[in-house]
Image (cartoon, one colour):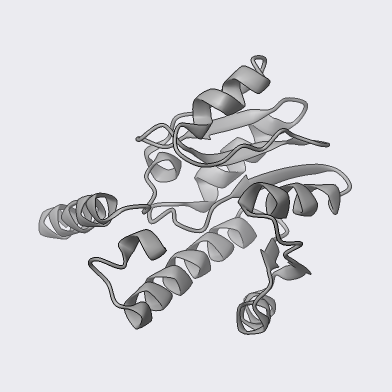
Length: 174
């Protein structure tokens, strides 16, 4: 969330990160999924355990290495979901889990990234800008799932403003 430092101070970024992560963990549990959080931060690790997740230590080396380490620790199918999905729901995660039975699933973000990867066994993770195209090129047999609940993430100030606008419009119609 450091990319939001121009619009949110450190405390606000932590608060937003924890709120989004809690929403993801709640949705995953409601979908019947086990949760594994990769972190090197003792506070985050305890927070994750308090929210029903198992933790493993971040091996260092960046996001791809952390996710690869988590996947290697799982014996069976897995879903990698980033904790910046403001509209994630249990039903959307359950749908991905059902589709992933026996195949790789990629969920692209609206800006060309990858918000969710699901599969079984090792995967050539390559997160960052335009990661969806790299992931699809590496696994052309993957099933692509587009979902408003899973394709909208909060990576930039522009994303944060768009989410706020959507939430404001939604509250006006309810």
